[in-house]
Length: 171
Image (cartoon, rainbow, N blue to C red; front, side, top):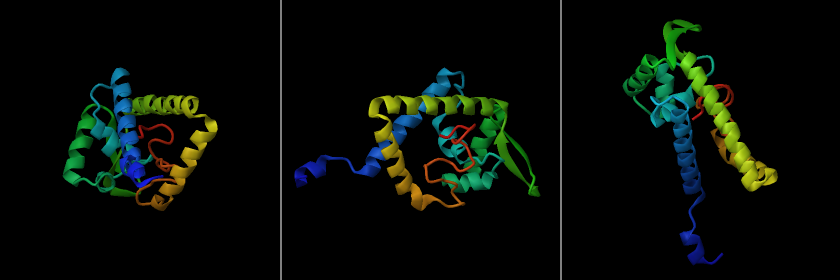
């Protein structure tokens, strides 16, 4: 490819960021349209996508989201007041508390999970199964360096045992 063509083509990280922004905008709009109009993008981006299925300490959520514990406490407090999450005693350490999904949060997670399945079906229609499988495989390989227990990201770019892989808004 000539040098002038490469300078106008976006870099892969830019395309990934743009795709993620579109996905998040569409997800939040879908949740709003489905009756969850009190959710904001920051709830999906900074709380739901970092929650473990068995519950997550607020300080862990803050670290994963790159936020202060105080800022995370405000987000969790808002979500708790709107019945998306609850804070319950940590079963592994009775002195601490973990954030878990409340009924409304579980329902929103189911809406999000269906949205992601429908989105992937649309991508199969647009790209074909083989091309989409190649994209997923390539992104999983790229994300492979991020596979550690601390951030909980698996090789598929999803949350390992957390939101996004089954019943929680992955955001």
